[in-house]
Length: 121
Image (cartoon, rainbow, N blue to C red; front, side, top):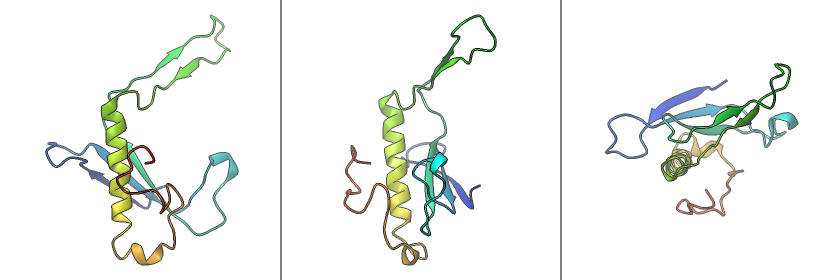
């Protein structure tokens, strides 16, 4: 569940927002491992209208066989750029009060990663 959400533009020239931003009151590296033991929050960025599309593939004619799922996430340059810009926006938001005073460190990508480092973001 998200405690906060917003619709934002990664480019001021866009007519409508292209990302949805969420704040969740927990942090986890992998869902199966459960939440981290330290106090944290997660900022999530979702692209509203991705260009990339995936597909399902039937493995057999047997309805009991699960299909192969090929999500094809971030397959286009636009999708990649949009998510990176969204993460950069989330990191900038965290630098402002009142949020800033509650953050002791950034877990991922981490303080060593520059805000402008596209590949690391």
